[in-house]
Length: 102
Image 1 (cartoon, rainbow, N blue to C red):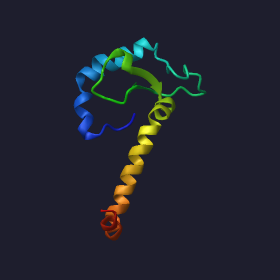
Image 2 (cartoon, rainbow, N blue to C red):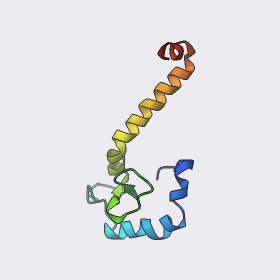
Image 3 (spheres, rainbow, N blue to C red):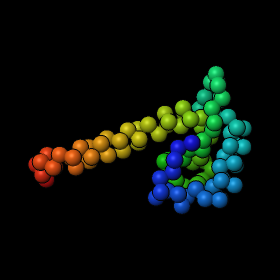
Image 4 (cartoon, one colour):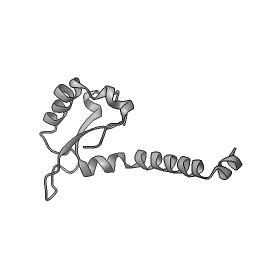
């Protein structure tokens, strides 16, 4: 399971752990809704927000995915954030380039 960033922890409290997540897993019959568990080794299931908004806990926005499928689903957003963070760190490490950009 991925670590939850501090700013998103408010969405993953007792209600998430005891009611919302288990209900999403039961709806999917404890199988990944993308690959249907056809992997050689069973992977732990994660519940993904399809619109990538953790505040949206609607049933149709949650899907039980294996770790591999969850990463594939979130890859575009992850790659964008990674590029933004990496460029910000590079600019901070090279102050002369940061000044030119302004």
